[in-house]
Length: 323
Length: 301
Image (cartoon, each protein chain N blue to C red):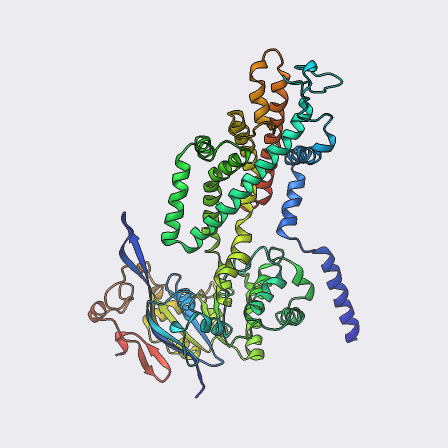
C-alpha cells in the first residue's frame, strides 16, 4: 500500500450571502459541501466537474488560501487548518499551486527572474548567486532559456507563461502541486506540451498532483485516479480506468457521454446528454443534489442525501442506486 | 555533429535575445508618452518653469524685492522686460521668484497628500472592515466641504503663512488620493498574482510592498500631476486672499493681489503672473493627460 500524502475529511466551505441595509446574512452558498478523500504519494488525482461545482474552491481550501467552514485537511501528519502562521509558512514550501490564467497569476511589474526568486527569498533558501543559478536551472527544466529571465510576463506566449507559472511552483521543491485548470486557457496544441511537461516533472521531482479540470480528455490523459464533483459534493471517485469503464454514478455517465466524438458519422447519443441547468449552490436541492437532472431519480433521492462510500475496492460513489 | 547543432541553437538564441529585448512596463509607458506631441509640449512647459524656479536666484535680472520708486509702474521696456509694479520692483524677477514658491508649495503639498492619502487608502483597502469604514467616513467628511472653503478654514485656524497654506492644501487633497488608491488596491488585491504570492507563503507586508503598491501606483502618479496644477491655483487663491505668502515673500497669487488697484493703469502687473499661472497649470494638465494615456492599462488594448 502506498503512503497517504493528504487526507481530507468532511471539508465544507459556505460563503455567506449578505443583504439588506445592515449587511445581515441572508443565506449561504455551499461552495464545498462535505467532501472527503485522500491523496496518495506520487499519484495524480483528477478533480472534474461543471464550472461552479466547487473544484477550484476545494483546491484553495486544501492550501488554506481560504479558511474552511468545517472539516480537516491533513498533510502528511499535520492538520493544515489549525497550524499557526509560522508553521503554515513552513508547510507552504511543500505544497504549491498552478493557476488557470498564467498571465493573471504573474505580477506584470516583475521580471521572470524576480518572480521565480521570490519563493526562495520568502523561505530564505540559498544566497543571491545560488538563487540566480537555481532560476537558470529551473528555466531549463521547464523548457525556457536563460535569457528569458530578464523579460516581463507580457512578453511571453500563453504556453511560455504557464511554464513560468510551473517553474515558480517548483522553486521550493514541493511535494504536492495543485494544478487549477492549468491548460484550459491554452491552445490545444500547447495543451499537450504542457501536460507532457507536467508528467515529466512528476517523474523527475517525484511530485504528487491534484489536477483540477473540466476537460475529461485531459484528465484521462494525466490522472491515476479521478474524482467527480457536482454542486460542491464529490459524487464518484475511482481509478481512471475504473471510472471510464465501470461508471457507477449517473452524473459521471452523463459527463462522459457529453464528450464530443470527433466523427460526424457517428451519431452522438443525445438521450444521455443532460438537460437543465446546474441548480444554485445557494439553494441546493434536498436529498441528492443531482436528483433534479438525474434520468434515474427515485423517490428516495428527493429526500435522503446519499452517503459517499466505497462500493467496490477503491471505487467510491454517492448514489442511492448503489446502496 | 552534436556540437554543431548545439552551436546552431546557441546562435538562434542569440538572435532571439536581441530581437526580444526586455520591455519593462515603465519603458513601455515612456515610449507611448514620447509619441504624444501635446503631452510632450506640456512636459516641456513644466520643465521650463522648473528650471527657471531652480535657477531663479542666479538668473533674476534684479533683486525681486528691491524697491525703485522712481521707476514704479513702468510698462515693459528694455530695462524691465515685463515692467515694474507699484514699488518699482521688476515683474520678471518677481515672477521668477514666484515660480519658485508656487511650484515648491504645489509640489510639496501634493507629495504630502499622496503620502498620507496613499497610506490611509492602502490600510483601508487591505484591512477592510471597521478600519475601512472609519477611514472612508473621514474622507467623506473632508469631501463634504468645498475644498477652497476648507482650506481657508484650516489656514484661519493655523494662522496665515505659506507653511500653513501648504498644510491646508495637503489636507484637502488627502481624500482624493486616499479614495483613488483604496479603489485600486481593492481591485489589485483580488488579482491572481496576489493569491499566488500568498500561496508561496509571503506575509502581508511583503505582499503590500512588493506586489500591491507597485501595481496601484500609476493612477496616483497621473492624479498627482494633475493635482499639482490644482494646488498651484489653490495656493495662488490663498495668497490672493492674504492667507498664503506674506511679504517680503512673493508668489503669483500675491502678485495678483498686489496688482488689484492698478488693473486699468498698469495691466502688466496682473497679466504676467496670471499668464505664468495659466501656463504652468496648462503644462501640468497636458502632461497629466499624456501620462494617463501612457500609464493607464485600460486604455491599452
